[in-house]
Length: 265
Image (cartoon, rainbow, N blue to C red; front, top):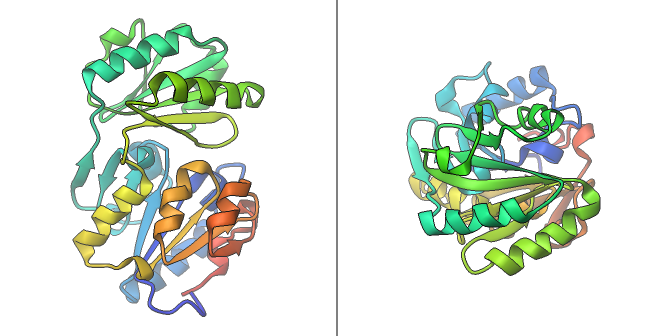
């Protein structure tokens, strides 16, 4: 990154940051720059609320061992060679959360597990189709109790008009056991306290002996806050929410302008 010396790790959010609104990126340009990163020993980390398997699908042209993933907003961390961390929401917490989800109207809940994501078979088919944009593995279930998996986080999809009300309700009902964060204008993630993107990146930093001031991070939404606060070089997208743009040290063009690719190392 010209003008940003000493960087050893670059972490990027995906939706609203690395990906354009149509969920694509300039593969040819990125592959060229990725080879430069490798040659200089700079680690590339994908840090997203999306499922690990979905994130992998975006980088099929690159050796799986060359990219690290902080998936599910930190609930699942893979260094390219092995799993480093797997979140596990407690059974009692899940029971409370399922009761809360059943009380909500006009939302679609995605239960995010280690092996797959799960959605009720009564969900709007259009919303299920939308969920598959984020979850490569997605199963329909009849009842939450049918799930036999380690649960990393829970995602809730809703219309933007009710987002703030659902967020407030989630914090009121579940705030003592789960953290509710905005993950885009239509999504809220319920995550384990202390388990977020910054936590996942910290685990990778320890693995690779990289300090905070050697990290560059790009993000746009509420689930990027901790990551941007931790990174020595934090970039908020111009399309990002106000709170993100306030805490980041630097600004970057919008996701549709290939922002990260404009900062060659």
